[in-house]
Length: 325
Image (cartoon, rainbow, N blue to C red):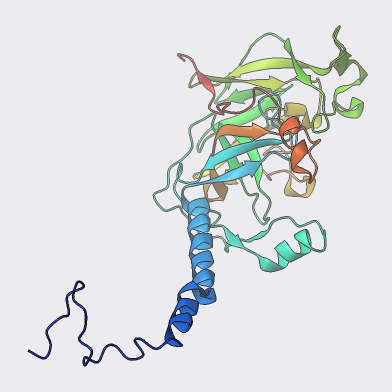
């Protein structure tokens, strides 16, 4: 039989013709070179698929988020890193993460400030497998007409009649429950400087052990569904009186927990606020928990990274405590 397969334990006879080039000394180095050389096209394809998988995960499952402002004190501090679930309310036009190479180049190479390193799709009404958030959820929101991401708390839902009077939120004619004023100390660091122009000279306190803290007045709010959380109460501010308004269908009213230092639904877009109740299509996801937090002293030197970690922040849940309504 001419097409019989040669067994691996058999040795070809001297007269047999082996594979082309077999036994030729020059062939072995050439084949070894082909086996050990880098296939750059395969490398490029591998990187492409890796990037696509990461972007898909960011777009549809979860993505990290960095806290850039103090609008959600005391629960969230500048320097906190969070996990945001992208599927909690379904997906909308703000869900996909599409890198913008021009913005990335300007931000990384030219050091120019950019609102976002991603491209945003045009507004598309509705959400895929959409649902409304639960009152009290902490959410990521993109204000209409912008590419910025804010983090705020859901206070009002569609159909609610909402107003704010002397700092008290009133939902459907009933004031939201507010506890007595108490105080919380937040350690002062580079990311939490406790500036006098924001919190007053008396807020920055030095303890007996020499550490400095920001001594903030706190009021615990309890929503009609029994979910409660802490807010910072500094006294009068322009947002202490608002409305009343009726929240439209498929819109939510959002507020920051640092009530007197938050640009939220109470303020116009021109004031860097959210411009009233926000379409639920503009919600990018729900904040779940803190992964880690940095005090702002880290540099490019990796040896400084460990020392910049804030203790006790990792794993902090961002879901409000629930009590019986």
